[in-house]
Image (cartoon, rainbow, N blue to C red; front, side):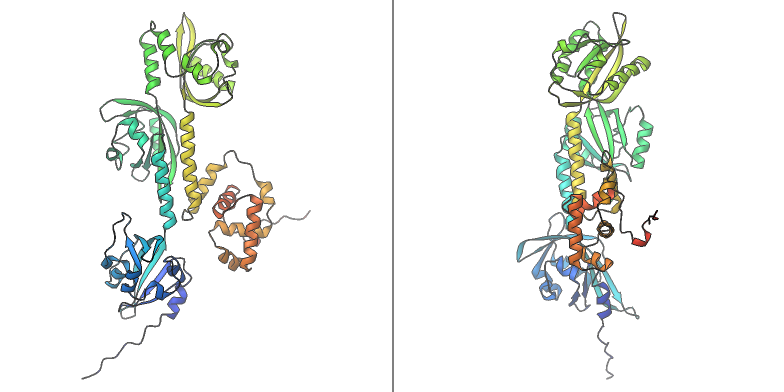
Length: 501
């Protein structure tokens, strides 16, 4: 009986050299079932140092590690990625939670894909698992989820790609009476948050383009068939890998009801004005003389009535910028009304009250006047600031965000910041090079290889940079650098040379 020719052993040495330094974890598996090699990254993201600790077979791996789906359902051992690879199943972007049976504190989130390597004859030589540790990404998303859900400001997040709502918080549900399932995955055309907006077409175009939508009045249709007047604004934000728009809302029903009551009956004007829950004032036009303020205005600002009424309405101490109120009255005189103009008031105790001012031209005893209403948005602006701060914290802490996202954050923070050129001048050319490589996501070891210096020297440069720019971690240094135009490593030969005078 003729003997079969045995295949020579597979030489994987060169392959191991190629993949050993990859940022992904790489595991090589023999078709017979043995785990023959794993690079340092694969071992590190499993919390082990040797292949024996990792598991030299699929069975040994399962004895050490327990895997769950993201919904916390445990994977059967037969569905472990290593088992599926041995069955020649191709899969990509499988996300699993990995824990160790001997260490309850160990927990990582892995994204796994499989690959089969074949020889010239098409026979499988090796099976490969490529594993990426995405723990920081999922932890960041969980922090954002908690912050968004707990924020009291009514809010929705709409995905730009298909204009469907992907997030809704309790504040929006309480304001409208919708159920969560009535909103999520429904289109912006089904629940139209821009209905009756004065510049509706422009706002919709901004939504399609993922641009900022300036605050505007709109009407929300409620589940019971009624409507609610709101002020809505849209802010573009990235959510994972998708571009989205964050909508925030102010309920205007109280203000609308107060305005309607004043229009319905002049005989009830005084009572409605005095008892209206929204701060209001009545002033003449040309010249601007304050006639009356209601109790809500006095309570909100803390001023006694005799310090406000009777004088020039544009010179009151309540305005942080009197020119803004004067411009509002001028617009009322020209067009008859103003809606949703943002302005700041100063209370008697010196604190700032952020408001949206609306005004309507009225006639009192044949005298042209302006009826002004002020919607206090101080809490809403604080809530929005807290929400954006939470997103910013997530972005700073999550190294998995792209350079584009970091640059958007830097642009958003640049408003009101100092030029910073003097601060850049404090860095030496070598420190500028190190900072540029940090912006590209390189580790100290990678920077040392790129600049041909020791890791100790790199650490000293990093510590000096932190001290000079007053930051304490890498993510903060990246944001600081982006704000000042440093986006990556710039070799000395490419930097602009100054010609000596």
